[in-house]
Amino acid sequence: MPPPVITRFAPSPTGYLHIGGARTALFNWLYARRFGGRMLLRIEDTDRERSTEPAIGAILDGLAWLGLAWDGEVVHQFARAGRHAEIVDELLTAGRAYRCYASQQELEAMREAARREGRPLRYDGRWRDRDPAEAPEGVKPVIRLRAPSEGETVIADHVQGRVTWQNKDLDDLVLLRSDGTPTYMLAVVVDDHDMSITHVIRGDDHFTNAARQTQIYDALGWGTPQWAHIPLIHGADGAKLSKRHGALGIDAYREMGYLPVALRNYLVRLGWSHGDQEIFSDAEMVAAFDLGQIGRSAARFDFAKLENLNGHYLREADDRDLVAAIEGLMPTLGPPRGLGPTLGPDLKAKLASAMPGLKERAKTLVELFDAAYFLYAPSPLVLDVKAAALLDEPARLRLAAIGPRLAAATSWTPAGLEATIRAYAEETGAKLGQVAQPLRAALTGRATSPGLFDVMSVLGRAACLARLDEQAPRSSVAPPSSSAA
RNA sequence: GCUCCCAUCGUCUAGUGGCCUAGGACGUCGCCCUCUCACGGCGAAAACAGGGGUUCGAGUCCCCUUGGGAGCGCCA
Image 1: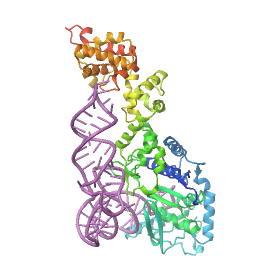
Image 2 (image 1 turned 135 degrees about the vertical axis):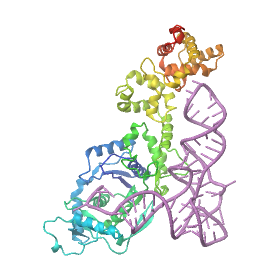
Image 3 (image 1 turned 90 degrees about the horizontal axis):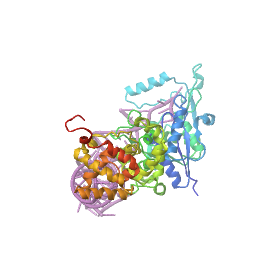
C-alpha cells in the first residue's frame, strides 16, 4: 500500500498571499483531499531579514478566508535550523559537502567575468578540492554541496514531464551561510523529508530548484518526493504578475467583493481542466482533481471571468450569508458611503429582505451594496443623471396622481402593489414602463434597480410616499410665472 | 549570455494521428423575454504562430524559426 498522500503549502512570509500562491495552496489542498491525505503548512522564514510577523498573519488569514484549511500545526522553518545544521554536518563528514571561503566580491567578480565572456553564471568550484589549510584567516566559510560534476540529473514531473539536466550545468549550491543559518535549498529538502511530504506541488519558478534539490536528496541517500510544477499566472497583459504589476494580496479580492467559493472555482480552472466543465462545487473539484490535467503553459488572469463566476455564486448564495459577508466588509464599505463601519439593525433587516432582488443583479458584493443605495440613501434622495431625466413634468404629474392610490393601497406586498400600479396604468392608457420608470427614479434615485414592486415593498409605505412627495410636480410648488427651480 | 520550459478563438480551455468543415466557457455583437437592469433562452463573429518533415492521413509525432516564460543569490 502506498504511503498516504501528504502535500504542503510553503509560502515565504515576505509579503501577502498573492493570487498565484492562493492557487498553489488550492491545488495542494485539492490533491490531498482527493487522495484522502493531508496538506501541511510550512512558513519558509529562513530569510531573517525579510520575513515578518504581519506577513505570516496575512497568509494565514488569506488561507482561512479562502477556505483552505491545513492539517496539523504550522511548521516554522527557521525553528528547525538546528536540524538543518546537523544534516550539513553529516554531509561534511561524508565528504558530500565542503567549506568555501570565497568572498562576496570574488563571487561577484566571477559572475561578472562569466557574463562578459558569455559563459554560464555559475560558481566555479574553486574551494571544492582545495586544501582547507589554505583557508584565509578569520573568514567564516559557507558550506557548499559537492554536487556531481558528471552525468545527469533527471526529474520526472507530473506536469512538465521528464526533464534532464547535465550535472556540469549545475553548480555547487550553498547549504549553510557563513553565519551558520541554513539556506532555503537545504531547508526545503530536509523539511520535506522530515515532514514525509509525498508530493511537492508548487510554482514552476521552482522547476530548476527541483533538479538542484534532487542532488541534495541524492547526497543524503533519500528518495525524492513526487514533483508537480505548475505554470505561473500572468497579468491580463501577459506580463509577469509582480507587486507593482497587478499582484494583489488575497485580501484585496475580498475587499473587491469576491466570494471565496467563486475564487476557488476560478482558480481551479486556471491551468487545470476537466473536459468542458466550468462550474465546480468543492466536492466536485475534489473528486475530479488530478495532476495529469494541469496544463503546461502560463495563464492570464481575467477579471471578467472571475466576475461572471462571482455573479453565479452570488445568485446561488444564501441571503443571510450575503448579509453577513457585507457586514464583514462594512469597515471599508461604510465610511466612503457616509455610513458607519457596521450595519445598523434596520439596514441589516432591509438588506436581508431586498437580497433576493439584489443578488440576482450583482457581480460583486461591492456592486451589490451600491445597488442597495436606495435602502440607505439620506433624505432628500439625490437623483443621478438618468433618473433625473426620467422625471420630466408629465412623469411628475403621474407620480402625483399615484401618491393617493398608494396611500390608500390595502395590500403593501409586491403582488398587491403591482396590481395597484397596473390598474393605474391601464386606466390612464399608459404603458407599465411609462409609470414604472419614473416611480423607480423617484424611489431609488437611479434608472435601474431590482424589481420595482419588491423595492416598494422593502422600502415601506411611509418611505415611498415621502420620496414621491420630494418629486412633486414643479408646477405645483412654484407658480408657472416663475421658471426658477 | 547559459540551462530549462511553453505555444488552439481577445481570455481560460477541450482535443493524446482519422470521431475536427476544431468543441465548451468568459467577453463581444444581434434577437427574444421584460417595469429598468440583471438572469435566462436563441443566434453570430472569433483560434490550431510560421516553415519543413514523418504518415494513406497531423491541431495531435519530429526538426527549425519566431514569440513568450522560468532559473542562473550566503532570496525564497
